[in-house]
Image (cartoon, rainbow, N blue to C red):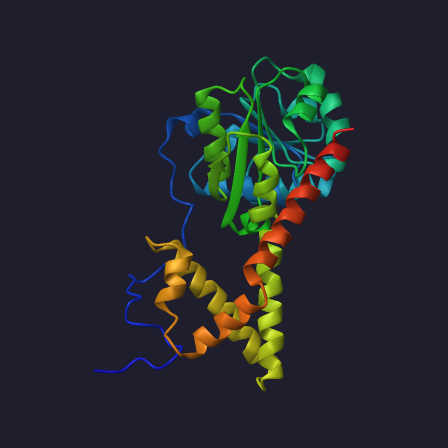
Length: 303
Protein backbone atom coordinates (compact mmCIF):
# COMPACT_ATOMS: atom_id res chain seq x y z
CA UNK A 1 0.00 0.00 0.00
CA UNK A 2 1.27 3.46 -0.86
CA UNK A 3 2.21 5.46 2.20
CA UNK A 4 1.16 9.12 2.19
CA UNK A 5 4.08 11.53 2.25
CA UNK A 6 4.21 14.46 4.68
CA UNK A 7 2.06 17.29 3.42
CA UNK A 8 0.25 15.17 0.83
CA UNK A 9 -3.50 14.64 0.79
CA UNK A 10 -4.37 12.11 3.44
CA UNK A 11 -6.46 9.05 2.69
CA UNK A 12 -9.03 10.53 5.07
CA UNK A 13 -9.99 13.03 2.35
CA UNK A 14 -12.38 10.87 0.40
CA UNK A 15 -14.59 12.84 -1.95
CA UNK A 16 -16.53 12.11 -5.10
CA UNK A 17 -15.22 13.82 -8.22
CA UNK A 18 -16.21 17.48 -8.02
CA UNK A 19 -17.69 19.53 -10.80
CA UNK A 20 -18.29 23.25 -11.12
CA UNK A 21 -21.66 24.15 -9.61
CA UNK A 22 -24.09 25.00 -12.38
CA UNK A 23 -26.87 27.54 -12.00
CA UNK A 24 -27.93 27.44 -15.63
CA UNK A 25 -30.41 24.58 -15.69
CA UNK A 26 -33.80 25.14 -17.32
CA UNK A 27 -36.17 26.75 -14.85
CA UNK A 28 -39.40 24.91 -14.05
CA UNK A 29 -40.82 27.33 -11.49
CA UNK A 30 -44.06 29.05 -12.53
CA UNK A 31 -42.99 32.35 -10.94
CA UNK A 32 -40.27 33.06 -13.49
CA UNK A 33 -42.30 31.71 -16.40
CA UNK A 34 -44.80 34.53 -15.96
CA UNK A 35 -42.83 37.27 -14.17
CA UNK A 36 -42.15 40.38 -16.22
CA UNK A 37 -38.77 41.88 -15.33
CA UNK A 38 -37.46 45.33 -16.26
CA UNK A 39 -33.82 46.25 -15.79
CA UNK A 40 -33.00 49.90 -15.25
CA UNK A 41 -29.38 49.97 -16.32
CA UNK A 42 -27.76 47.48 -18.66
CA UNK A 43 -24.17 47.23 -17.49
CA UNK A 44 -22.18 44.12 -16.65
CA UNK A 45 -24.25 42.99 -13.66
CA UNK A 46 -27.55 43.49 -15.48
CA UNK A 47 -26.19 41.63 -18.50
CA UNK A 48 -25.09 38.75 -16.28
CA UNK A 49 -28.51 38.53 -14.60
CA UNK A 50 -30.29 38.66 -17.95
CA UNK A 51 -27.98 36.00 -19.36
CA UNK A 52 -28.58 33.80 -16.33
CA UNK A 53 -32.34 34.12 -16.65
CA UNK A 54 -32.25 33.36 -20.35
CA UNK A 55 -30.02 30.32 -19.73
CA UNK A 56 -32.63 29.06 -17.26
CA UNK A 57 -35.26 29.23 -19.96
CA UNK A 58 -36.97 32.52 -19.09
CA UNK A 59 -38.67 33.88 -22.21
CA UNK A 60 -36.96 36.95 -23.70
CA UNK A 61 -40.41 38.52 -24.10
CA UNK A 62 -40.65 38.73 -20.29
CA UNK A 63 -37.43 40.74 -19.96
CA UNK A 64 -36.58 44.29 -21.01
CA UNK A 65 -33.87 46.80 -20.15
CA UNK A 66 -33.20 50.51 -20.37
CA UNK A 67 -29.91 52.31 -20.84
CA UNK A 68 -28.98 55.83 -21.98
CA UNK A 69 -26.31 54.67 -24.44
CA UNK A 70 -27.35 53.43 -27.89
CA UNK A 71 -24.37 51.06 -28.09
CA UNK A 72 -25.26 49.49 -24.74
CA UNK A 73 -28.86 49.01 -25.80
CA UNK A 74 -27.82 47.47 -29.10
CA UNK A 75 -25.41 45.07 -27.41
CA UNK A 76 -27.86 43.86 -24.76
CA UNK A 77 -30.61 43.42 -27.37
CA UNK A 78 -28.35 41.49 -29.74
CA UNK A 79 -26.85 39.32 -27.00
CA UNK A 80 -30.10 38.33 -25.31
CA UNK A 81 -32.94 39.06 -27.73
CA UNK A 82 -34.78 41.35 -25.32
CA UNK A 83 -36.58 44.65 -25.86
CA UNK A 84 -34.62 47.77 -24.91
CA UNK A 85 -35.55 51.35 -24.13
CA UNK A 86 -33.80 54.69 -23.82
CA UNK A 87 -36.47 55.84 -21.35
CA UNK A 88 -36.49 54.18 -17.91
CA UNK A 89 -40.17 55.00 -17.39
CA UNK A 90 -41.11 53.22 -20.61
CA UNK A 91 -39.10 50.16 -19.62
CA UNK A 92 -40.86 49.61 -16.29
CA UNK A 93 -44.43 49.82 -17.63
CA UNK A 94 -46.27 46.62 -16.73
CA UNK A 95 -43.24 45.03 -15.05
CA UNK A 96 -43.71 42.85 -11.99
CA UNK A 97 -40.09 43.32 -10.95
CA UNK A 98 -37.95 46.42 -11.49
CA UNK A 99 -34.24 45.73 -11.13
CA UNK A 100 -32.20 48.82 -10.33
CA UNK A 101 -28.77 48.10 -11.79
CA UNK A 102 -27.22 51.56 -11.94
CA UNK A 103 -24.13 52.89 -10.19
CA UNK A 104 -24.69 53.77 -6.51
CA UNK A 105 -23.85 57.44 -7.04
CA UNK A 106 -26.53 57.65 -9.76
CA UNK A 107 -29.23 55.85 -7.79
CA UNK A 108 -30.86 58.84 -6.10
CA UNK A 109 -31.45 60.77 -9.32
CA UNK A 110 -32.63 57.67 -11.20
CA UNK A 111 -35.08 56.73 -8.44
CA UNK A 112 -36.50 60.22 -8.05
CA UNK A 113 -37.11 60.40 -11.79
CA UNK A 114 -38.84 56.99 -11.73
CA UNK A 115 -41.05 57.58 -8.71
CA UNK A 116 -44.07 58.96 -10.54
CA UNK A 117 -43.97 56.13 -13.10
CA UNK A 118 -43.98 53.24 -10.64
CA UNK A 119 -47.06 51.08 -10.35
CA UNK A 120 -48.50 49.92 -7.04
CA UNK A 121 -46.70 46.92 -5.56
CA UNK A 122 -44.06 46.66 -8.28
CA UNK A 123 -41.15 44.86 -6.63
CA UNK A 124 -37.96 46.92 -6.54
CA UNK A 125 -34.75 44.88 -6.55
CA UNK A 126 -31.58 46.90 -6.06
CA UNK A 127 -28.20 45.39 -6.91
CA UNK A 128 -26.30 48.61 -6.16
CA UNK A 129 -23.76 48.41 -3.36
CA UNK A 130 -24.38 50.50 -0.27
CA UNK A 131 -27.90 51.74 -1.04
CA UNK A 132 -30.18 51.04 1.94
CA UNK A 133 -33.85 50.18 1.83
CA UNK A 134 -34.59 53.37 3.76
CA UNK A 135 -32.92 55.44 1.04
CA UNK A 136 -34.77 53.58 -1.71
CA UNK A 137 -38.10 54.04 0.06
CA UNK A 138 -37.37 57.74 0.54
CA UNK A 139 -36.62 58.19 -3.16
CA UNK A 140 -39.25 55.84 -4.61
CA UNK A 141 -42.12 55.88 -2.15
CA UNK A 142 -43.68 52.95 -0.31
CA UNK A 143 -42.77 50.16 -2.75
CA UNK A 144 -41.78 46.61 -1.76
CA UNK A 145 -37.97 46.60 -1.83
CA UNK A 146 -35.35 43.85 -1.87
CA UNK A 147 -31.77 44.97 -1.40
CA UNK A 148 -29.13 42.67 -2.88
CA UNK A 149 -25.36 42.48 -2.63
CA UNK A 150 -23.93 40.33 -5.44
CA UNK A 151 -20.20 39.98 -6.02
CA UNK A 152 -17.99 40.00 -9.09
CA UNK A 153 -18.01 36.20 -9.72
CA UNK A 154 -21.69 36.76 -10.51
CA UNK A 155 -20.42 37.96 -13.88
CA UNK A 156 -19.48 34.30 -14.51
CA UNK A 157 -22.70 33.05 -12.85
CA UNK A 158 -20.64 31.73 -9.94
CA UNK A 159 -21.47 34.54 -7.53
CA UNK A 160 -22.68 34.85 -3.98
CA UNK A 161 -25.44 37.32 -3.15
CA UNK A 162 -26.98 38.45 0.11
CA UNK A 163 -30.62 39.61 0.07
CA UNK A 164 -32.76 41.60 2.49
CA UNK A 165 -36.48 42.32 2.08
CA UNK A 166 -38.63 45.05 3.61
CA UNK A 167 -41.86 44.12 5.36
CA UNK A 168 -43.92 45.11 2.32
CA UNK A 169 -42.38 42.31 0.22
CA UNK A 170 -44.71 39.33 -0.17
CA UNK A 171 -43.67 35.68 -0.02
CA UNK A 172 -44.12 35.42 -3.79
CA UNK A 173 -41.95 38.48 -4.34
CA UNK A 174 -39.24 37.06 -2.08
CA UNK A 175 -39.28 33.96 -4.26
CA UNK A 176 -39.00 36.07 -7.40
CA UNK A 177 -36.03 38.00 -6.02
CA UNK A 178 -34.28 34.84 -4.86
CA UNK A 179 -34.73 33.16 -8.24
CA UNK A 180 -33.46 36.28 -9.99
CA UNK A 181 -30.20 36.33 -8.00
CA UNK A 182 -29.90 32.54 -8.13
CA UNK A 183 -29.51 32.94 -11.90
CA UNK A 184 -25.95 34.16 -11.24
CA UNK A 185 -24.96 31.97 -8.29
CA UNK A 186 -25.90 31.36 -4.67
CA UNK A 187 -28.50 33.64 -3.04
CA UNK A 188 -29.02 33.82 0.73
CA UNK A 189 -31.34 35.92 2.90
CA UNK A 190 -30.46 37.96 5.96
CA UNK A 191 -33.24 38.96 8.34
CA UNK A 192 -31.68 42.23 9.55
CA UNK A 193 -30.54 44.87 7.10
CA UNK A 194 -27.46 45.72 9.18
CA UNK A 195 -26.16 42.26 8.28
CA UNK A 196 -25.87 43.39 4.66
CA UNK A 197 -22.68 45.14 5.76
CA UNK A 198 -21.37 41.77 6.93
CA UNK A 199 -22.40 40.25 3.59
CA UNK A 200 -20.39 42.98 1.90
CA UNK A 201 -17.40 42.20 4.13
CA UNK A 202 -17.52 38.43 3.55
CA UNK A 203 -18.62 37.96 -0.06
CA UNK A 204 -18.98 41.40 -1.62
CA UNK A 205 -15.34 42.29 -1.02
CA UNK A 206 -14.29 38.66 -0.60
CA UNK A 207 -12.95 38.01 -4.11
CA UNK A 208 -10.21 40.58 -3.52
CA UNK A 209 -9.05 38.71 -0.41
CA UNK A 210 -8.58 35.53 -2.41
CA UNK A 211 -6.83 37.47 -5.17
CA UNK A 212 -4.46 38.85 -2.53
CA UNK A 213 -3.74 35.34 -1.28
CA UNK A 214 -3.11 34.15 -4.83
CA UNK A 215 -0.81 37.10 -5.43
CA UNK A 216 1.15 36.38 -2.24
CA UNK A 217 1.42 32.64 -2.95
CA UNK A 218 2.63 33.28 -6.48
CA UNK A 219 5.25 35.76 -5.25
CA UNK A 220 6.41 33.31 -2.56
CA UNK A 221 6.69 30.55 -5.15
CA UNK A 222 8.90 32.78 -7.28
CA UNK A 223 11.13 33.53 -4.29
CA UNK A 224 11.43 29.79 -3.71
CA UNK A 225 12.76 29.38 -7.24
CA UNK A 226 9.76 28.70 -9.47
CA UNK A 227 9.26 30.60 -12.74
CA UNK A 228 6.42 33.09 -12.31
CA UNK A 229 4.14 31.45 -14.87
CA UNK A 230 4.45 28.08 -13.15
CA UNK A 231 3.94 29.57 -9.68
CA UNK A 232 0.82 31.35 -10.94
CA UNK A 233 -0.60 28.29 -12.66
CA UNK A 234 -0.08 26.11 -9.58
CA UNK A 235 -1.60 28.76 -7.31
CA UNK A 236 -4.72 29.35 -9.39
CA UNK A 237 -5.45 25.68 -9.96
CA UNK A 238 -4.93 24.94 -6.26
CA UNK A 239 -7.40 27.71 -5.34
CA UNK A 240 -9.97 26.41 -7.83
CA UNK A 241 -9.59 22.79 -6.80
CA UNK A 242 -9.78 23.62 -3.10
CA UNK A 243 -12.97 25.62 -3.62
CA UNK A 244 -14.54 22.73 -5.53
CA UNK A 245 -13.62 20.30 -2.75
CA UNK A 246 -15.09 22.62 -0.11
CA UNK A 247 -18.34 23.26 -2.00
CA UNK A 248 -18.78 19.55 -2.71
CA UNK A 249 -18.07 18.37 0.83
CA UNK A 250 -20.45 17.71 3.71
CA UNK A 251 -17.88 18.85 6.29
CA UNK A 252 -16.56 22.32 7.06
CA UNK A 253 -13.34 23.95 5.93
CA UNK A 254 -11.70 23.37 9.31
CA UNK A 255 -12.24 19.63 9.08
CA UNK A 256 -11.00 19.56 5.49
CA UNK A 257 -7.86 21.39 6.59
CA UNK A 258 -7.26 18.89 9.38
CA UNK A 259 -7.71 15.96 7.00
CA UNK A 260 -4.97 17.20 4.66
CA UNK A 261 -2.56 18.27 7.41
CA UNK A 262 -0.32 15.35 8.32
CA UNK A 263 1.43 15.57 11.73
CA UNK A 264 5.00 16.66 11.24
CA UNK A 265 4.48 17.32 7.53
CA UNK A 266 5.01 20.27 5.25
CA UNK A 267 1.41 21.47 5.42
CA UNK A 268 1.50 21.51 9.22
CA UNK A 269 4.69 23.58 9.12
CA UNK A 270 3.00 26.16 6.91
CA UNK A 271 -0.22 26.22 8.97
CA UNK A 272 1.75 26.75 12.17
CA UNK A 273 3.59 29.65 10.54
CA UNK A 274 0.27 31.22 9.49
CA UNK A 275 -1.16 30.85 12.98
CA UNK A 276 1.99 32.17 14.65
CA UNK A 277 1.56 35.29 12.54
CA UNK A 278 -2.01 35.78 13.78
CA UNK A 279 -3.67 34.80 10.51
CA UNK A 280 -7.18 34.24 11.88
CA UNK A 281 -7.13 37.46 13.91
CA UNK A 282 -5.90 39.41 10.88
CA UNK A 283 -8.75 38.06 8.74
CA UNK A 284 -11.25 39.09 11.42
CA UNK A 285 -9.71 42.56 11.62
CA UNK A 286 -9.86 42.94 7.84
CA UNK A 287 -13.51 41.88 7.57
CA UNK A 288 -14.47 44.12 10.47
CA UNK A 289 -12.84 47.05 8.68
CA UNK A 290 -14.84 46.24 5.54
CA UNK A 291 -18.06 45.93 7.57
CA UNK A 292 -17.53 49.35 9.18
CA UNK A 293 -16.64 50.98 5.88
CA UNK A 294 -19.76 49.52 4.25
CA UNK A 295 -21.90 51.17 6.93
CA UNK A 296 -20.12 54.50 6.43
CA UNK A 297 -20.57 54.40 2.66
CA UNK A 298 -24.26 53.52 2.99
CA UNK A 299 -24.75 56.59 5.16
CA UNK A 300 -22.95 58.81 2.64
CA UNK A 301 -24.83 57.42 -0.37
CA UNK A 302 -28.17 57.93 1.35
CA UNK A 303 -27.76 61.68 1.64
